Length: 61
Image (cartoon, rainbow, N blue to C red; front, side, top):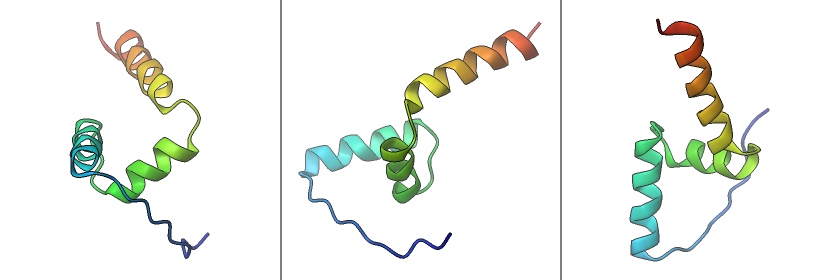
């Protein structure tokens, strides 16, 4: 599905820096993908935590 809608949000410089740090710490390359995932995906943090646990349990010896 094409992405043809634009959303603009105003944030302070401090908020922007926090968003950028969070994006980078989670491994996102683009701000757009990070924002889409955080807003649209249910419990992204929980999913990542469960995924990390699964990888450790199933793939580490």
